[in-house]
Amino acid sequence: MTYGLIANNDNSYVQIDSDTPRLCAIYSGSYTPSGRFAYVNFPAPITTAEPPCIFIRNSPDRPNDLYDSATINGSAGNWTGFSLSVNNVSDRPTGKWFAAVFAAKTSEDYGIRMWDGSSAVIYDSGTVPVLFTKASHSWSYQGQVIVNGTAQAYYWRNALTATLLIDEYFMINPFSRGLLQSHLNWMTSGVRFNYAQNCLQVYGISAISAWIDIGSMGAVFARLPGT
Image 1 (cartoon, one colour):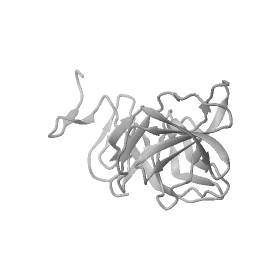
Image 2 (cartoon, rainbow, N blue to C red; image 1 turned 120 degrees about the vertical axis):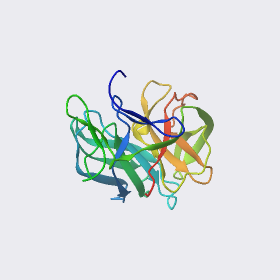
Image 3 (tube, rainbow, N blue to C red; image 1 turned 90 degrees about the vertical axis):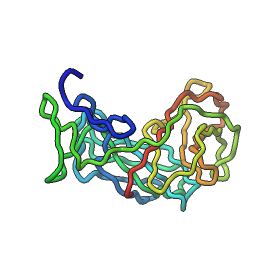
Image 4 (cartoon, rainbow, N blue to C red; image 1 turned 45 degrees about the vertical axis):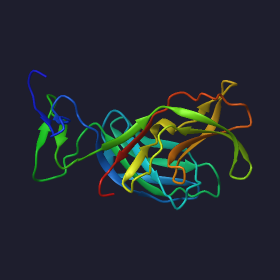
């Protein structure tokens, strides 16, 4: 940059950049089931043009629930919440979440606040930054399995293998829709973090043959300290 503000920490990582907003957690909480669905309403609409990144931590108390849909409610400039669904009628989605955007929320009476040339707040010391922990788009095909006792499915696992920390989440946006299969139509998919195997898993629910390579969906993990 020619003009502006940039701040680096002791490891030379950029902490503040007046030209590049950081990803910040705007709201967080826990979700509870309403049947096989979970509905979350934000305390107030998120006003960014792009939809928020939704990070979830599916409960280790329900390790077998497969999340087959995530829908962000609202529209550009007025994102009001999101909903989750799980694949089986007996599953009950339970866990924690946070919503993050590349913007700041004015929330504190004291601290540092910075605006860009159009008067949008791009930094506020009271807005919690998202701490990325790891990411991978490498998936390995594991074979054909039966899920929920009866459904035929295909199973892939992400290359990352590590214990999910108590305040660590994965972004569900890349897994919010189905998977393209060999007959060029969509099959229902499901995603979950498997605590026993310490990895993210994706299942394609279909009786039709699936492609072994499902593409490069991003498995992105981040921490939200204190949650």
